[in-house]
Image (cartoon, rainbow, N blue to C red; front, side, top):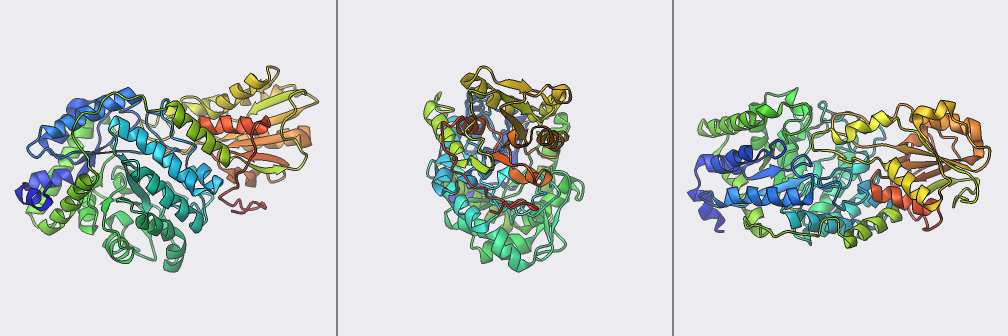
Length: 549
């Protein structure tokens, strides 16, 4: 494509359409067709709600690209998905790995490179060409409710190394990687899906901690950087990063030298919706330096019947703003030039892809299982409980109320999308090894008759959810009660991050998988059964304990 000639030939309406990455509910292809054909929208945010299976993903992506192919200019679409391990699409079938914190626990950049290479191959096989990851955030705040296991860890050097490796892994396998959430979401307590957080680090702290992984990812060749809806008081005390020319221009472009595409985080998050009028926020964002505006309409608490109307209204508002001079045509041409350059240089096409058996294939399952195994860490085993003695009684206690799992597949396409809880995967693996394994549910623990011999394994879980928390209300209480009852025979298996240790610091046996994914649960079973060594180390610290990253 001759990019300059294409820009000259485009109408204002066609240019503005290219500057949006929009969404649609489920399989509402007519809504998608209107966006792609009538408005020349440049890309789509694809969720698990859109593509629950690989076959559905292939059909959808082929259909969307056919819409683009039929337009006057035939410009391919950017089709992006949050396939980052902790969050995923095609979840029941794809090999997305254990997630970033588990990769960080391996301390091996090659694990990040291999896993993101696998993710990229699977996405590209069904037509999804943009990985909305990795999260380059240093999770330095243990109270962070939205990043957590989406982060490689808290130490800037480790996160930087893993981020660069993930970028290379994805982009060496055809997909485009996205560094997020610039300039860093790791020191927040408030989830930006719920409200507008503020980070009060000094500028020097931001440079040394939060920005180091982004600099490494940019140096590794990342083609996209995603903004965060967060106010950084030392950089711009008034505007969140998405709306700040200081952060996106002076810092990202000038200081860090990023020349690629800047995409916003979803403008439908409550950090935006509750603080800014939608059209004004989008106009401010474009003027600040956002090239591609994303609206992931299909999740949170939105009315799906209004998706199309809301998105068309925003496109119309931006077109009017350009014609009124509120957005300079030079800014529009700059953004469209970057969008077209990315699509051209990445070799994206509107041509239909053939059927594939690559998603979740045996090779990819072996890769994710191997990598998950490298993350398992024996944090404490003061009484030598590992490996567990299968000749003695063995009891598994689920510390999570069964009702807590209901939300995992009800985040309308974003988030874990994991129908089978990690506990169930682990329990099945343990029962396959020893049929006498007893299982006690959280609901039954108060009346349970615990054996007087053998190891008691209490399993804890957490799931990173957008705009809500996983219900862990009974977990710490059950662990403390078990410790009081059985003492040295208690072993806690954390199918989550280890921050919970602060709630029961006296526990003597603690194994952490840093992940809730099935591959991590299976890898944990291997370690507890003595089939594999535990080689991981925690990439995060836990206040009030000896655990240090």
